[in-house]
Amino acid sequence: MALELLLIHSQAVSFRQQASWPSSSDRRAKIRFPLTLGVDYRARGREYERGAGQTVNISSAGVLFIGPHKFATGMRIEMTAHWPVPLDGVIPLQLRIRGTVVRVAENQIAITIDRHEFRTVRRSGVPEAIPPAKSHLAG
Image 1 (spheres, rainbow, N blue to C red):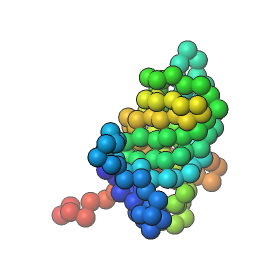
Image 2: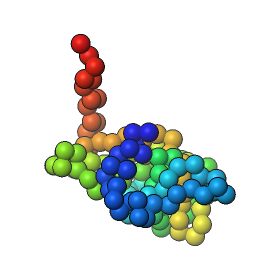
Image 3: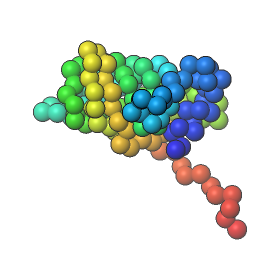
Image 4: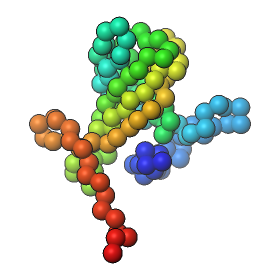
């Protein structure tokens, strides 16, 4: 849910015009947003395959991306996307995703998102975890 809210917040106006809304015949239940983000990935198979690619679209449940490697359905992938909107307008963010390949068509790979997290990026390029938000409900 947090990923979907951040997706909507980050580019709401252009997304409303370009978002791919699920139709009644579409098996996907989540809205796909046409985000073009640079990604670095590592796929787990017999050996680790590392590479770089680019997202085609993203939802809170999955990512469609383009990459040069051949993937098999069921492969596990760890991916880092370079998020376009900085935290507080200043701090660069990365979206880290762990997922499973569910579909491959030519150079397009669809994965489900099993786990995701946003991480801030230090100037040295080393990401760090975002601290948990303080609750305004605490007395």
